Length: 336
Image (cartoon, rainbow, N blue to C red; front, side, top):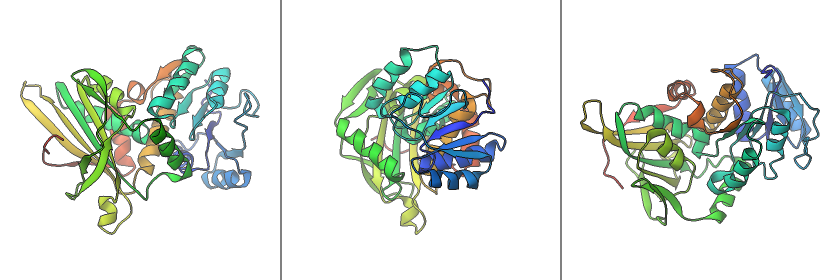
């Protein structure tokens, strides 16, 4: 794989695509980038601001995207690749592909497309909350325990921090599929209807939320071995905005298990970013790209991959700190 060919970012002028490009440019100044957007002038402005980047338009209804063959090192779908043309293009070129917008149920057709050509390309499915950064944070914290029995995640996203038009469209699409949440209970993945959940913010305010169906549930279960896993999501005024600042994002992680001495222990920490979900979302994509093309570790072989199966949690934790995220200790809270 020629990693010095540009990484093609579909939706590169949107929030997720632009933020990812900026993060990759900071980490790897030599890595060329191709910013693809519907508006070529806007794509050129983004590319010019990055340096070492080119602007292009693509046709998501064409198998070749309207692009010449052999010109890229990876494809990032920073938008919903609804026809899977970006995925098929990556398979045809034999280059890695990153997906972030399929969600828990829309991911099924994507898996089928990827699985029918298992040797064609590495496919990273990162349609998790904040593109897998929360899963990686949980996996990092869980390393403090010898055994993990239960994981509870409560995320609070500010209502003014939706992620732009593409992010709003994803949320609306996922909401029409199911209102049920997914939990792992005693080792069994179970559909639940829990819409009266309250997630405690770091300033003590309870924010209304619900148990949700996200890829984080099976990913956390697989990464930690926990037989009980749940993820709650609350959307409302964040602690950052209540304090007079910018919308923030907070993720309460509670892990029950036993330590190396065999004693029961609970880990209770917040993962906080005072600038909201955008840096965490971009971080998850950028971590995936650098791993897939061999800028962090060896290049990844063909197949279907998840963030926790590719990315070292310790490396992810270091990158989290580097983009301004913090782990904040809190007293153990009563299980919800």
